Length: 477
Image 1 (tube, rainbow, N blue to C red):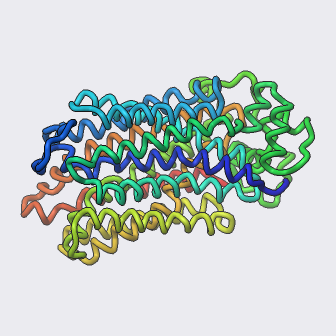
Image 2 (image 1 turned 90 degrees about the vertical axis):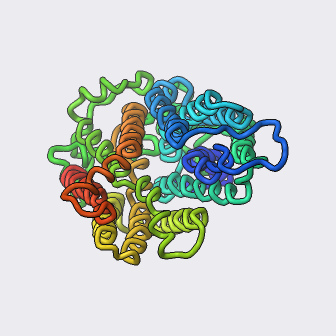
Image 3 (image 1 turned 120 degrees about the horizontal axis):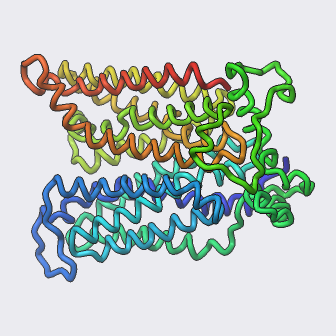
């Protein structure tokens, strides 16, 4: 395969605006909750006042992002097959631009709900389309490293909104956090005219000349027309080898096996993509579906969002600073550690990196629970940082990469849609259940409530152990 070109770097940077926006809006309301909900008084008249709301109502507003994400991911397969990977990313930006704009100018809860719903819908589309877009445009020799950039830009987005929220957490300024997102989304839509769709998708539509042209622009090579006509083989030899390994009898390792002798799953013509139900009915795809769904479950079931939420109270006792700066420290750790898989993934591979990440998360989560129950604050603080680092090592980036790696071309879109829908549902369940479950477990057996605050994290440790065991058995690389 040829070398990368400036066009490849440009198209990749353009696409990475999507995970940046997802991370941005995941934490967009954290720093500005005070001025948004009138927790401080205004000293000057404002054209758009703050909105008084209870903590429960603010939680509902926040959760509409997850609801929108589920709807977006559920429809992503149809959207990607109709308008392509690029088209889905453009729609992602359109929905985020409109949703952020609506939120920024709203003077009531209904506008906030609509804005978060639209933003979430766009984020759901983008989360499905982006990993596939990267996998189909990156040369095989750097495809794994490029795939990690999805999670890296999510963490950068979280860091950006928390950094921006510090100076803008004022009654007269907080809306600019949403305005900044609107402007970035508009810029991405405006520059889409310079971006081409992936060669694989173009070839699947019968646009073989366009596919060949884009291949040359991306990799600076003279691809034969025959290669660009077969998306299931075009630029996917590495991932198809992985798919053969996974989908062959028993999913055995095949380091010393001629992959040409392994059975290839029957394919559907690229112009006739299958749906989610059709994919689930195909026995030869089920192992891949199980692996990807388990990976998505372990990502959210690890309790990463709950750990980050709870970290403020814990680390405030360790580091004498404000809650806002503590959250920023967690985000910085997340960003720094996400660079690690970029360097390690080629040497260790996706499977080992994912299992190492799960193992580190299991140990650190169990220690966090023990530290909280025992009142060992320093152990709790260190455990949080180790957990965030472990998550960034594998559980963060790799589940998104697997959707484009483990199945033939024709099943990529439905698998991505199913996987991200599972991700959003698990995210929602963990977010809703965390506080009630923590309080329930803390009261079991009597004693003071503060002595049982860590028990909920043993539940997360159990989820990590169960999912890790399942992945170790099913995922063969």
